Image (cartoon, rainbow, N blue to C red):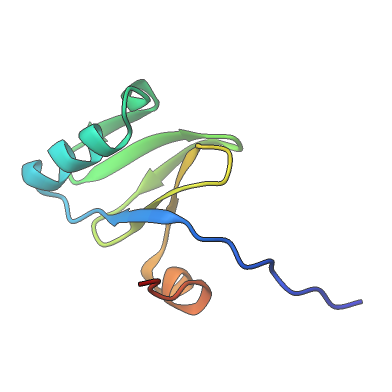
Length: 84
């Protein structure tokens, strides 16, 4: 059987390893920051599937249940397109 992913609009921020972006991510998570901590240039994120690490260049996505998780740039580009 084949399935098509339902169209869902998501919010995402690209992590670039800088303090400015870290501050933006902290603000964007609106109080859910205890689930995200900075380790050098990576981010440790507590997801619904357990701890995942976002590397420099990865996207941080807010899921449909308000959860956060990282996504590699190539997967992000193949899965999502900009919405105006």
